[in-house]
Image (tube, rainbow, N blue to C red; front, side):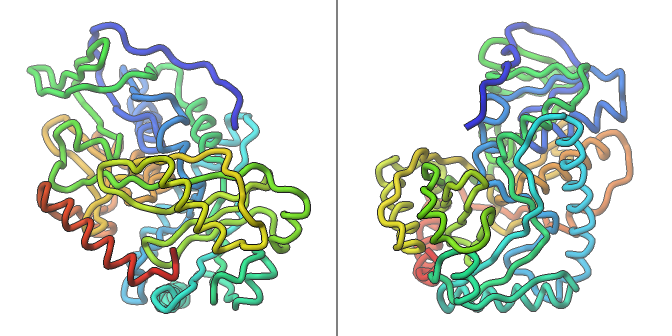
Length: 413
């Protein structure tokens, strides 16, 4: 949906630098920028396996929450979550400022977001979420089925909450804009997948498909793909999820979708469906989950089409212009894979689907920690990733848990 951009060259040489950062997403860009601020003469190389905006940072649904609210939020977490929210708000503000600094026209607006429930499991989760918002003294608005129908054009949900603490965006445009604001002193290489990392006498060697780098400090900011480089293999899993985007809707179709013209709905159940109406009049739906593999496009297209029709039967069969998937880095308990794992090896992963703003915050703080700056106790605030068994046990556990939770939250699918 965006115009072409000039792609940085791939790495095709063997050289030494001070710092290598793997992954030019929200985490990697924030880490690179902060490291350059702290050590202006540092030689930094930033690598991305794909192109900036083409990977997960540009494939997500475009929700940028400026408060860090866990799915299992409850009043007992209020003090801890307030500290998390302070960090998250600061990270979100830095994104807004950098996008403005880029001078590019970017679809990024603080519209707020809806959370909506269709069945009993969703309603219970919505009640817990509302209790947390009240205890945290965060603003929200309650909506019944009729109000949701008037605002969003669907009576699929029984009830919902609206929170102003969220930006909606065209995520690929945001990450492109952020990439233009990093210092020119940072060498950026695109289409440069990392094949292997190895400790060497000077620090680390990073082998790519066509070259290599040696460095004193190595940062892995490639989230779900960290395990593929042999790090956190027992803590991190790649979970694929899928999205589809319709063609722009007709004026009559848009007229049936309620009074709000730029909105997003987050599910109350972890396996529910995410929904958006974009500023150019398209519907987006994100749903389905697979562990470390992808479903066929035909199956994904059919499932997402069915879930969209359940919410908007008045629109009939809608044509998807695009259908795609992406891998999200998940941990079993929702905790982080973050910090120094070996001398000179710094890692940030396991954002559990919140890598836009949360990843920005974690990348910046990782640079601080690596350069001896005081940082908050992130383990106490966000938790540490717990152990997961290897395959095939992990795969069987995922299938059983997913099937059980899908049955429990079947009304939210």
